[in-house]
Length: 386
Image (cartoon, rainbow, N blue to C red):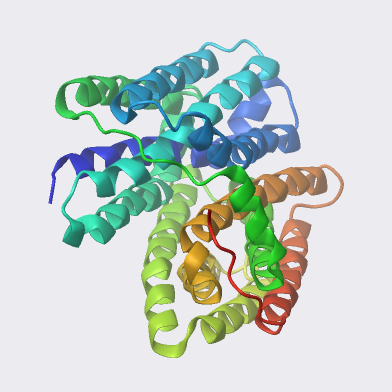
């Protein structure tokens, strides 16, 4: 195994932190920049939306650029985006900084996934991709709690200063430690879009979009939800985020094991049913903190348990276009994050924040319907990539 893969994991971790860190410091940003919580939440929306739209586009647009050089360019742009955020005088400049970091971060994540298997022997390629995924999941576990602690003690800009420092270290590391990696031909956008003509694929991706929208409608505003309904201090909020993150990462392993042992369809169905029940239950557990933590653990597990099962299902549905479908599923996931954070922000400006959980439950229930629509759609021959 090439140890440089672990360095790519660190870069994926840094990008993951920037995407998720906003949810833990929404109130601090809103207060300092004199905007509503909903508007602060849209900083998550714009990042996820650009990530979803531009990941496949940028990969195709840069397919001829040598990978080490491209990664350095992206890291410099990523650093610039964070510097803009750190020194931003108002909401509009922060919003622009998020656009810059999202554009560069989208390509950085894909580059890590592409470069890692290219750096190792054939028998380690799957493990290399898994290591990069650990970086993303590690950001979920550590990113939000770290950002929350730094934000509460030093102001909301402090987490971005940390990210900027880590990015500088990454630039130095890539320059001196990474070897040149020649690019491979990317799958054309036309071929990616053509995969959607398969109804089983279309409804499966719609399922990913809907359940992630429902999840994010509450998760993006979890801190104000906890503070408003439970009146907990910053330490307890950080602890809940940390517990949730650990649960989510374990959920990925649990979901993969269940899909292998009981099948992807049964795993998706049961997970979504439990997901709906969990979201309906959450607002009624806030009076008893231990009970809320238990339900949060279940929520965290379910939030990631569906992903590996869905990936397995997509591979089973259309093996010949598996690589395209994994990319499209990732895009659908980020569209879900964008939609959930956007509509969640609208909701809290109109009704009490507890309604975010009920709206999330409705969206997840709709994802259960689309999952069955996918499973019971007529089979269609997999599309061939030319």
